[in-house]
Length: 472
Image (cartoon, rainbow, N blue to C red; front, side, top):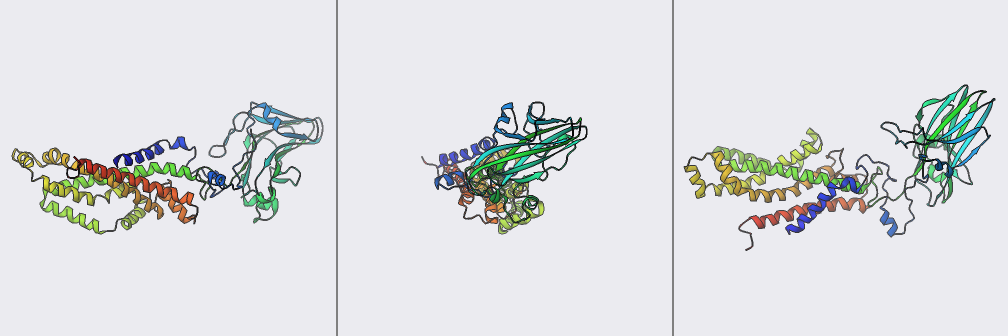
């Protein structure tokens, strides 16, 4: 029984320790990994469901090498423009925003000998094999340098190869800038301004209109240059990418924010172990202290401590915790401390009853007769004899702490900045996802198995350390 419990605990300890290596995502801030409430990939595979997967069809959106340009179809209105690969430039990213793509970019350069306009278009063909698309986003970074009287503008175009092309965004006239820019707001099919600008209707679904059926599509960028005689225009393009959010993702799918549920489950083991063990240590330590002094000192000290104990035992624990958490604030550390300081009463009574028996033993009376003080007798004679009970109670208190935290989080009183198993169950209930069992069942099973593991270890320790239960 003890070995089985220890094996389950070891499994969750390894899950907690290896969480950053098991999954690369953040349990809270990695939103939009796939479409919201996406199904697990294995569920779609087992049922042969034709559900869309995450796609990023542009293989080298950062133009990391000269050959990257070969995948693009380039058309231009005149021969005066040059299309080059620039190693010196590259979109570095914006602090706190979009990622950078590193060195490498496309350079569109025009040197004018007379008044003329030029247009350069880059198009990347790809195949979309699924049903109408639910959500997509396009990213592009650009930077311009103008010498003389000239300007340029940029358009982002997406559509079927042999059908209507949709201009999703255009920069307007630019006179040159030394800094990289990206579209603001981001080009996303869920953006209301994009729906109104392109389709004139906020209620439309751009993905279902543009990507109406499986087929061949293309993403393109069109650079329009207006120059006067003697001017030079250089436009750098980088990180031209298309992202398609899929309907399936990972081992357990995604939640209402597109976050990976498996990541939440993995990182939740860390918090459950921390909350359970630390709360149990606080409860056992406080209960041990109260039980020792109450049982050995006796008299008014015993009476006062036990009456306080009785009062706290009569107060329902969960409602009291709910009130205290609401007043103090729902942080993980406040929850750990509150669960610990409200879980010592039963332990104190057990320790006290044991101390009442031990203090009448002959060796305790002999120590007292030889001049041993209260501190010496408690530390040298009573504590070693009650520690076996303390170890057992420690193992048996951890499951209660884990379940209590899960109950608080389920009721919406957990720390909002961490994702625990209880918070996962709260999200399932809050968003009405009870029928999506791959989201609802795993956290419940993890709470049950981890609690069961500590119970098994506690019972095993009781059989090993308690002489009355020990098997000979």
